[in-house]
Length: 498
Ligand code: NAD
Image 1 (cartoon, rainbow, N blue to C red):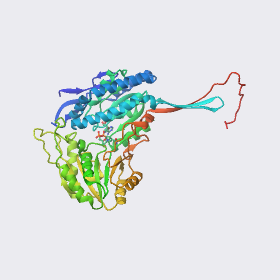
Image 2: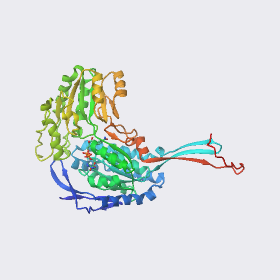
Image 3: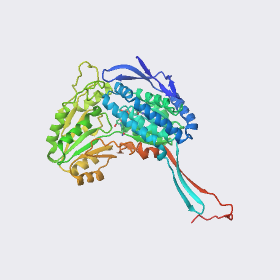
Image 4: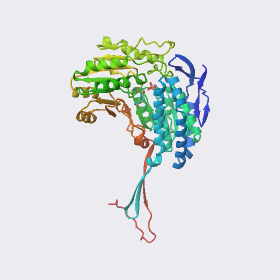
């Protein structure tokens, strides 16, 4: 190993002491040159203690102080976009332009946090009764934990900690152990921007570290983003320990293509949304539902485009799609394609034999396209999280929507049509948290919240936007009477005010 990734606690690097390490590979070469410290419960406790100590001053810091740090942080992140994106590419594998996009979307939440002064304005009603005023205010929770997935090692942590910290909380982040370095750089830059020690801490680890956070008495709330089984577990466990929880889970996002759609635009969108970031996006389109007679033509157009995608190392500017994150994940993704024909699918593009010259040890998989996929096929029922697109056929709009609504997932969905009435009907009838109309990946901007329905989210709050501010604060209503010295004493009254 040439590099070790340590924890960041109390504003400085802290070496791991558990003597447990996780491998971090470069997915484009298969080389495991880095190891990451896996925290014990005691190390998690040290991070929570640092956050708790920092909360005593950060929790009552002025809005002016917080926003000054955030504005400096925004400028530093902007100046280090390329560097952060390169760290993401080296450990995740996605192409550099895509990594730059994830940094930009994370930065958007920092920008939202820069405007926290407006978001935290309370409400005041004067003279609700004689000389009585009522104010609603929102206050921070204390120490908040964030647990993030491998697929957006910079953006997803930034969905969480900037807003939580802007609201006056302190934070312990447990990033994915598969690509842990980006979050450390994000923490270092925040410190450089003037964030006091202990306000943001990063502990690396696996289930042991996560479990320690879920039951820790000093952790008030948990933000989680990851797969559905773990999201469900996080929600159940952390709420049982009295914590506020938002747990965003996995997805199977459908794109409904109506017979009147512009098929070239729909095919462009399906290919971009299915194979971008090698399908390792929670908003990737993994199922296209072709309505009426458009199926064959649409599959032809998707195939034509998918065949041309250049697979290669993320650092090579000519690559359009990078490798999968680990060798084990690559094997799992390939298994869905290998078993597809036996389950009744037509394998239009296989993708499993993809090799990149000069990088033979990388975790490669080319675009795979499965047509006429039955809803019983494993490739349709499970979240694959790789470059595998399933096409299903439906006779009518109603059949298509019913199919989408029967999925246990409800993260995002999209409709491609020229019919405004059908699009509006879809927007009202479909059961998903984010809906695109001629937009394949409807990830909202930072000032609108993000989150799915059904098994794609456990908890009441979506992430960032207004929901994010709400999640990271709790309400208090203050009723005040300042009697005039000239008033006669009110006297005792045991009645309920009418
Ligand atoms: P994952 O669920 O395996 O891991 C997420 C986090 O949970 C990691 O930090 C990991 O260390 C931790 N973890 C894993 N197993 C655990 C266990 N048994 N107990 C406690 N903690 C555990 O997810 P992943 O593979 O890193 O990321 C991909 C998944 O994330 C996909 O399912 C994808 O759809 C989902 N995702 C969802 C969204 C969304 O907004 N809904 C966004 C990004 C990714």
